[in-house]
Image (cartoon, rainbow, N blue to C red; front, side, top):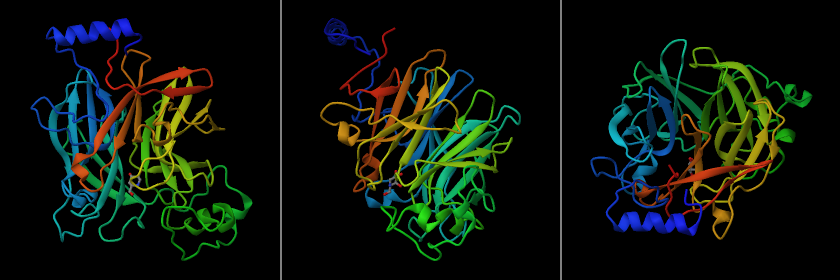
Length: 370
Ligand code: DGJ
């Protein structure tokens, strides 16, 4: 990134002189190598075989774009600036098909990981079956033999049915006071534990909305999602094939209402970034650090600074990742536009680790120095 005015001046001169060095312009329209606007919202990155793959929600224009009308879009790149269109890799099923991923469902925040044992590419996403708003709180899974698909939809699940979290409280085995109750994704009338939402959802599986995936150095994969009516994050281990939940999961940030979880491992520690719950409107980000994925997690405040810190620079986290072969980390966020969903923008910014916290700083335009 531009470290000082001199470097910025050199960059400006190079631009004036006709250098077409790629750079990031957070919030600007971002086009692919064919000149079409990149359409991959709520996305994530997979690095595989020397290429980066960006998967995200394809959104159509207008408010109709807040529902899944097309499917999951993929782009690929070798330099993380120039993205080639790889097409729709998981299309929605036709209307009336009755499929959980039927056109008009809500299919959000797709993430793809590669399973080294099976060689399969595994996609998980937040799935709300058509016509029920956000009450389904399910997760969908799809697989492919190639990163660029096509992905085959396998199932829609509520995670960890019949399993208590590893950090369950005695009260979770007791009666639930939330039986039959549904909330709107915002605050609850009581603390999630006094309602015992885990107990309410024990038999059918835990709620899972905003989500990400993470593969640790030992090959274990984790599904991290907003649960318990959005009040609490769950970190859930996946099975060896990454296609199911293993039954081992833990609850964190109880009653803190975190959405949009993103995670990266840096210097042997686990760093997470999340948002609060304000629908499509941006809010102040939160961050946390842990020495083990199973916690304890320590919150370390808003990683943003400056005038737009309280709205995460008008964005919401979707992914954190390390550039291959470096220790550079990138924040990927969405600047949603629910009135014209296709015009949602991408906010990518450099992440700086700084002792016991990390920082995401605003730049109108930036690139890594070579
Ligand atoms: C916030 C979530 O982070 C988004 O993915 C989306 O589900 C919106 N809420 C819907 O209001």
